[in-house]
Length: 118
Length: 115
Image (cartoon, rainbow over all chains, first blue to last red):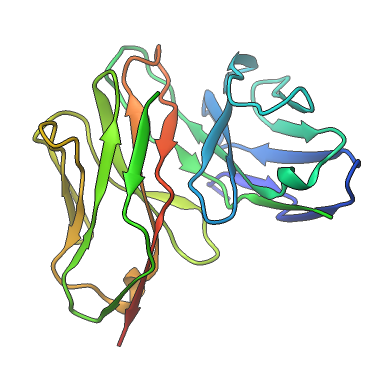
């Protein structure tokens, strides 16, 4: 399809397990974002990639969270030793980046992965 | 830091009623403002945007005006339809983010429209 896809759509993990969440951005999109959306809340920024470079990881809540985008396309968000507070929907978004300040490049969101940690 | 506050839901309306969802923001720079919508079972979609003060964003009958003096960006629609039932998120993006736009979202307002 032409949109952002994420897999799996649903993931149940036992506390302490490691999980990996995948994002396939729109082809050719340079920018990729990860957001975390807790139940009943708005999405919160986790990290940003420009091609393969992770330029901002200020939103990652702990060192258990790790993201990569090794070839500048598909990205994986990995959570080690999951905790119950990690239960949330994880959203991926991509956009075409153009140079210059003041330009907004629309972020296209995937359907999200709902992670439940028991 | 920057933040967005929007009215709590759920908002329940009858079809053809007037809709207002309030949104106010706090930002140190000159943000762009957005409304995103999340229909059941679907991903977030951009509904409308405004990039500077006094701009009016509009789409699908929805409107919002960037009011710098009141730091607000209220969403309005003159006549809602059942198909407008969704969760609406107000968001801002600081244009000074070095070429990329990290979005800051409000908590969302659920709208339910009944026939």
